[in-house]
Image 1 (tube, one colour):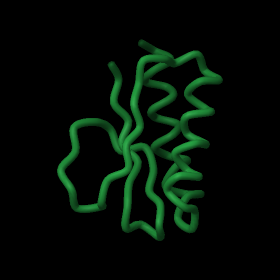
Image 2 (tube, helix red, strand yellow):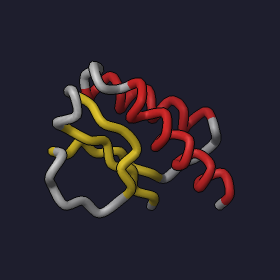
Image 3 (tube, one colour):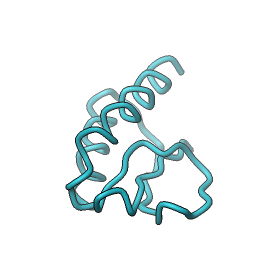
Length: 74
């Protein structure tokens, strides 16, 4: 559980800072690679519009802030 919290925390801080100009698919792939490298499994990453209600943790933004990447465990 500590790995999960650490990974989500780091991704939420780093994701927004470096992802403003990236495509959503590119950012989603990078986040997935980082989660896999940390040994985190059984998760999903979804792309959603900025204003959309989501069930999960926002871990990044893309398309110049108009979209977001949402992490769900389980």
